[in-house]
Figure 1 (cartoon, rainbow, N blue to C red):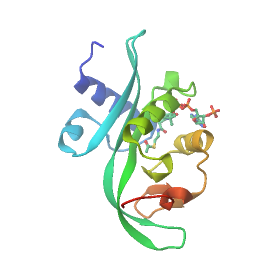
Figure 2 (figure 1 turned 135 degrees about the vertical axis):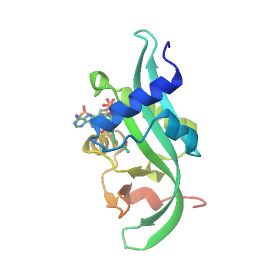
Figure 3 (figure 1 turned 120 degrees about the vertical axis):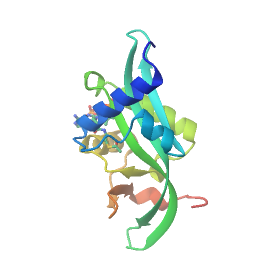
Figure 4 (figure 1 turned 60 degrees about the vertical axis):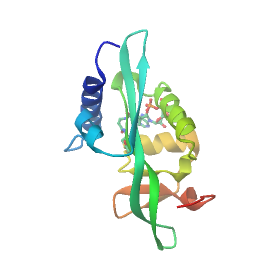
Length: 154
Ligand code: ACO
């Protein structure tokens, strides 16, 4: 991999923002340096020497409503940014990267809060993990109905 990690974070973060039509870039090297507790997983194809995808996760203190409208203050694992290069989408790379992240983080998928999920990500979560019943939050995060199940600690 010739490009250094700063270049990879900056270019993939920018591409992710463009793909999501965001007004601001949410992942770049500078932000990562100044944000505590965020981790980025990067999928690379060493044959073509290309970076294929990026997945940023981290814990945030959030107020989460359950399906009865009760608010819970929680320190949640969050999906913050997820992007697979346009030329590689819908070929299983996203699932591969996501599975690796779940394995390393050792957090069940339903325990993540998701920051402003795109329709593509909602379809992805429904297809691969059967997550479909959304509880939308006022802070633009989304959780699923099983978010509160079998949770220890927060
Ligand atoms: N339209 C509808 N569903 C899609 C699309 C699409 N264009 N692309 C992916 N999906 C969903 C579908 O469920 C698809 O299954 P299908 O092809 O049988 O319909 C499934 O994802 C494919 O799974 P993978 O191939 O493992 O996923 P992929 O490599 O495409 O990665 C990702 C998924 C990251 C959402 C990718 O499509 C992407 O980068 N999209 C653009 C950026 C984006 O929307 N990122 C999420 C923003 S929200 C956030 O980051 C918190």
